[in-house]
Image (cartoon, one colour):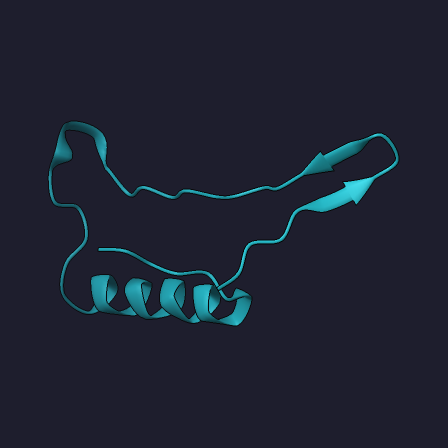
Amino acid sequence: MTRQARTCPGAVYELGYHLVWCPRYRRPVLGGRVEDRLEELVRAKANEHGWRIRA
């Protein structure tokens, strides 16, 4: 994926997002089918936008 800076009058910018899933006290809160489905949805949305996911 190539990053591209955007421009508007008087500015140049590039936005990036960083999402971290970390529940309070780092206890496991998702499991089984719910965890699998959530991962599937997040990966599908990332692919739709051309974002990469690092594990």
